[in-house]
Image 1 (cartoon, helix red, strand yellow):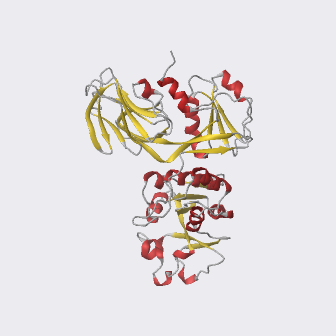
Image 2 (cartoon, helix red, strand yellow):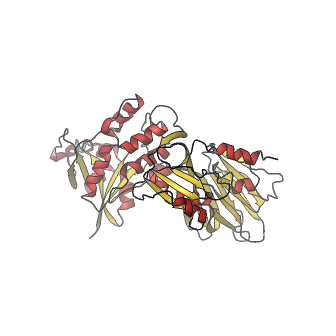
Image 3 (cartoon, rainbow, N blue to C red):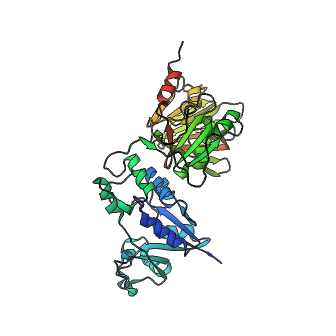
Length: 455
């Protein structure tokens, strides 16, 4: 039997508790519910909105732990609006897609004057051919003659307006039960929907009883420390990472979509992303949080196969043979270096600037700096070329000038991507991690010890 899926698309800015109830109700009727947070339609004005990286996190929090419900973040990541007709094409190859819509969109359907007919791309064809789930609310009646040919009607307890919620948040008024407590806490923590830029740093107090513990299995000290912290895997409020910075990177890659802060405990060496071993438990401690976006890295192999991955620290290309690499460097699509002759080149975040970028001669950046580093390794030409600091929104591309005679290998946070024609890196629009630090831990002070070593 063909799988039936419900495509639940909308702004979800912010996602409300009623959205979660609707998704749960849809999951009773369909094999899978795919929630698609959308960017604004072209030409559609948006007031008091927040960036995709926060909207993605709120959607993950709002719909998590719902059976047969998943959140698809492609629109937010790509920064482009996908019309419903394209969603049907995208998900309709191996399943039977049903479009979830509000009752207001079908009004006037009998005359061919509904919003679907008049405002949607290919709306008139969709009205005749597509399948629709119409969400009805107690306060709005639906004329049966207005319904599309293929439809289901599902009654919802209430259907609320995200515009109303944004207005309440902007005016600093209580939102009541409009939002899940976890979503409301996230909004408050980052200062969202207040008409001002969100806070990159914030504070968080946790009960310290719901922990997910990730420890380095090869580090005896990490295993010893881990015994002090009970682990709860179902619904953690804090992810405790015990080991070195490498353990933290692995934990972030595996668990970032939990949207839970990461608290690192250093059982390794320098541990820039980690805290010292706490003297007591983590119960009722107030942490300083750093909101750190991840790099989105794309590579293309010699055979034309493309891969995408996320990096917290860095991504780089390096020579694959004894010959030096010839690398074309582009920034935002504009060629900046026609031929960088070096052993390789690396793109690093501020969080990763204390790692390989520093070893290659770059000056480390304080955590939270809105910049990317572009660094060359053993540069022969251009003569005297030095590491470059670029705006955080830059798109950096490293291309092989001669992929067959002078092949490049690509790496993302140390993970090999094999021989590549090019590597492209930019900050992700949806992926981020929150790093938690104890009040006595100052990552800037730890960085200063490197920059100003004691004699």
